[in-house]
Picture 1 (cartoon, rainbow, N blue to C red):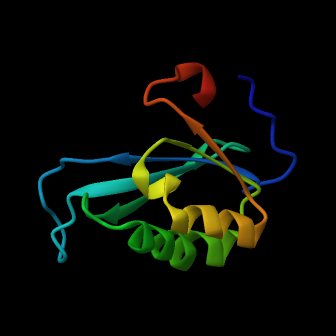
Picture 2: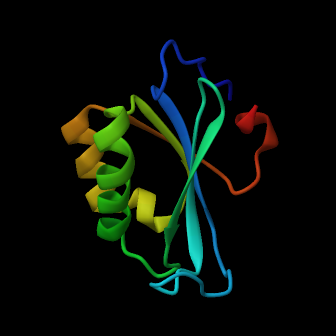
Length: 111
């Protein structure tokens, strides 16, 4: 599957988690949500908790990233329940964004 090239910054992003980290920070974070925007491949690392819900994740993305960059056109992620839940389906419909899911390891998608 070939992913289109973005025509502007923050149009297409990849999202994934790095989990099972030792607790750190004032809130004992044990994971990071990594958002990479395809236009320049710039990463954003958001500290979070492995057991955060879909709502927690949506609020994290909205409050820290979308409020700064605007709404993405396409979000590429693995099939994590946080991204495939009813909440995310409704958010995609509301914002007019397109979800794209892949299996856990697809190096050709990340190019």
